Image 1 (spheres, rainbow, N blue to C red):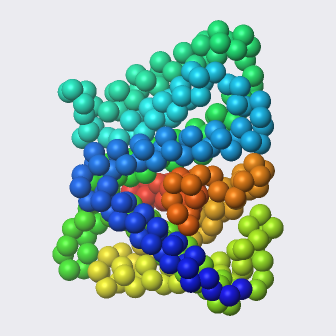
Image 2 (image 1 turned 30 degrees about the vertical axis):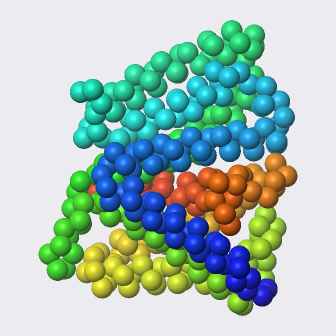
Length: 292
């Protein structure tokens, strides 16, 4: 497969902007990070509902309250996971998230009955999957950002884990995606999966190897814990690839090329963040187990 340099330049530029926006959201403060992922959360939900509507046209008939209520219910998970350092009008975000979550837990089924005159379990199932796929993942990355435990380097530098871990995840995914594309374009011959015909075994393996190696070298040079950083890179390279395939499967079922068109060369929110959606819960679990 010949290298398409024009496509690569577009993808690389978009990926660079993506990384810069992620870094900006992280480096400013926890509020900027929360706002950034709140926008991503709602963008992913809009595209998810559009995809499900193409897969099962009856889902497009859900009530307006169901359509937007489930998004707010999912956002309440992010509020609940944000940590007590963030507060609004003197009330910490977890308390606001808990209140919103309880309200929508009881209100959604009642309003659904009033609007639709019946409860469609299939529609509820689609929305519940969206909560697990989108909202829970973003709640976990917001929760990771709220952690203040210190990662200490060999040089005595101290990094709050909530500051550093999202950077490690994002860079790992970016490096894996970029290197997999380059390797696959140069030497890729064997299709990796029928779900994503352009993805090759050579590109996938090359991207993973270069991702883990690069992140381990960065950790070594910064005198961070190489094993921890490499472990996150392994998760990003493997689970991230599964996330990409999952979103590709949804698009195939929906009969579309991209989930949206907000990011040139990468499509929509789900196209850009598919790897991060599946990687985040596994990294969150790894972080929690590492603290025990």
